Amino acid sequence: MSFQRPPARQPFHLTLGALVLAGSLFLLAACSQIQSQTSNPAPVPTAVVITQVQAAAPTANAPTPTAAANDRAVGSARVSGNFLSANQAALAFQTPGRIKEYLVKEGDTVKKGAALAKLDTTIAELQVAQAQAALTLAQARLKQTQTPLTQEQQDAAKAALAAAEAAFARVSKGPLPDEVAAAKANLDRAKAILDQAQAAYDKAGGASNPYSALLPTSVNLQQATAGYQAALAQYNLAMNHPTISELAGVAAQLAQAKAAVSQLTPTAENLAMAQAGVDQAQAAVDLAKASLANAQLVAPIDGTVVLVGPKVGEYVNPGAPVVTLADLTKMQVQASVDELTLSSLKIGQPAIVTLDALGGTSFPAVISKIGLFANNLGGVTSVPVTLDVQTQGAAVYPGLSANVEFQTAP
Image: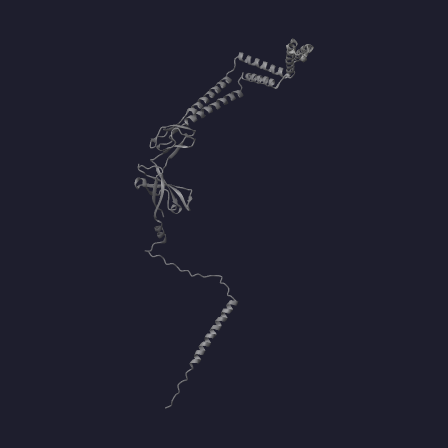
């Protein structure tokens, strides 16, 4: 029997050393790779591939996304607003004046055309009378222009024209030679008398004689001086003719005479001017009567008086509201709806209106108008929405607050 020797075992330290060597070689290779990538970076890929995942088809029991979205959109929208009449008017006078009387009071029901209030018409009535008098005068002038004058009137007008023309020519030529000669002779005679009186006064001692004022020579000198001054004035007047005032006077007389003659036979121009005067006067009468009529406030619609403004005796300007009239049988509610809710509303959509003033009483309503102009208040954008409300005869008035609730549409 032979004895076999078992195989020799590798030393442990050799195996461990081999592992350490292998690890070192791996780390060295990795560092070389990193350094190579740092010095020579790899190019960026020009295309990216995205893996798409095919969605699974919905099962028969699962709801579609559209249906789920609609379910979330359906809801109840609530807004607040105020009642107003579908036919409401704030009435005012068209002319200024002082309120004389009211013919109605708040709460009265009136028909179209009924008188509501009146102004004091004293001034308006005087204006009508004045305009009527001017119209009568214009009509008389038109009739006179249309009617030919008698022969005697025509002869008198022509004679007056001839006299006015002669006077104008006479004054325009200035003084006649005979008039100048006569004025000069009077002036010379007055001068001679003055010289004689002066000589007699000087012979009596003149101013050196303390009694000269008592002598007749002093009186004669005063009279002669006055006569000379009057004669000089007449001479200057004759020499300075015609004056501006004299020419203006004869020119006015001539124009008046010509106008009278032109009226002897009516012309188309004269008739047109006379007719225009009548038309103008008639327009003034119509305007005055309109102002008088506007002093009474009349109801333009059937309705209820909901507000009476100024008191009797107060002065009101044109356009200032005096009486507010509303048709309470056709009421509406106007509310501001935010833009998010607006997208789910449409005309004809029903709603419920609740009135706090009647203890929470509700009335059916329907959207009749959606405004086209949005408002932004406090960062919230809203649009006015109007609803027609069936009040069924309830005591509902303009201005009362209302709560509106309607179902938003998908």
